[in-house]
Amino acid sequence: MMRMVDLIEKKKQGEALATEEIQWMIAGYTKGEIPDYQMSAMCMAIYFQGMTMEETITLTMAMRDSGDVLDLSGIHGIKVDKHSTGGVGDKTTMALGPIVASLGIPVAKMSGRGLGHTGGTIDKLECFPGFTTAIPEHMFKQNVNDIGIAVAGQTANLAPADKKLYALRDTTACVNQKSLIASSIMSKKLASGSDAIVLDVKVGNGAFMESAEDAKALAQIMVDIGKGAGKQTHALITNMEQPLGYAVGNSVEVLEAIETLQGKGPADFLEVVFALGKHMILLAGKANTEAEAIAMMEESIQSGAALRKLREFVAAQGGDPRFVDDPSRLPLAKEVVDVLAPQDGYVSKLEARPIGHASMLLGGGRATKESEIDLSVGCVLHKKIGDAVKCGDSLCTIYARDKASAAAATKEVLGAYEFSNAPVAKPKMIFAELS
Ligand code: URA
Picture 1 (cartoon, rainbow, N blue to C red):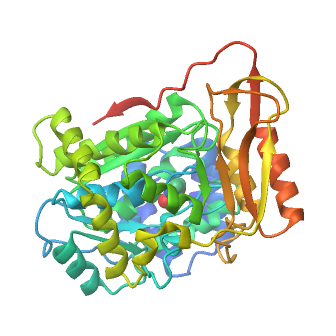
Picture 2 (cartoon, protein in one colour):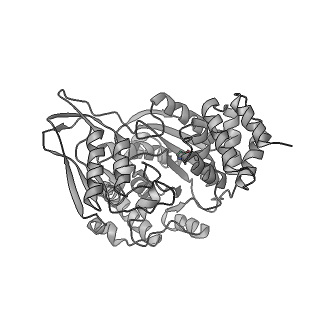
């Protein structure tokens, strides 16, 4: 008979777990037969000893099979999913989803909520009053067939092993381990039934992977898992050294996503949106070259097709589409404070993590999975790496519920910035691509 304590000991000694051992462990943990304390010891052993590629693939498949595996074959066309490993100011899905959907590519997406200093698409979409991602499977499929896009939350029975394990890892300092991240993300992607996957692996202090080497290694593991499961998988390594775009929060990010679809998007954000989008379009077989794919996305924005698609999408999931037409209706907290530059110079550093943390302190992020969040708070940056500043310029506008949280966030924001006297180059956004 297998005993969890023996498996923990085996991993602690640096040995590889056998396929049946991993399968037994995940099945037992999902059913509640293996307690959290033993699973957390196992996660910590994995954190220090790692897993082989074979173990990682077995773990992914066991987590995928711990619940339902969606069958999206009833949706016409090649379904391409996009997934980000998590970052600060990452409102990519809200802009990219409608763009690619407007080009006739079915977007059937499972998204998550924010956790810790990172934001989540579901919370942001809930800024549209009435909007829900808790839609039944038949409606999810129907919406994709009718309007080309639907976004749902991770249903209780999609990779439930990951749901339990992720919450456990989050509270036991075991999130940033490559095999655990790769299996967590890929188990959900493989269970949610798309035909091809584009991964946005973030690197930098606002991401779970802080070095480009680690991010590349993580991306390669995920690509190999995806391909091993018969799905075309493409990964981009993108910059999360500073927040993406200018807005960090919920309403403020929705506003920036809408502005992007109105043709007024920040350059760094658009670069990432287009880099991911071109691979979605190519994988879906809708363009032959990268240049053609980018021209299609530009046209979708210029013609207003992407914005109209966002409107349709919001309405189809119960949201008030008037907020797309007039985003000034989005809730913004009343206490407005500008963070001022303490000196002249050029911004040489703007760390993403403290900005994400500032948004959390304002009430815009979750300290625990159960926390209620305030959609109206957030930060809007005005100066990013490479920008020239004069002493007293506004670096960032903070939208807060009260003076105390505004003061705490101001401190975080100021601590995120560094300045230099010499000009600083704008950072590169896309570091590498793997497939
Ligand atoms: N996102 C996930 O879904 N899982 C992880 O482990 C990290 C980021």
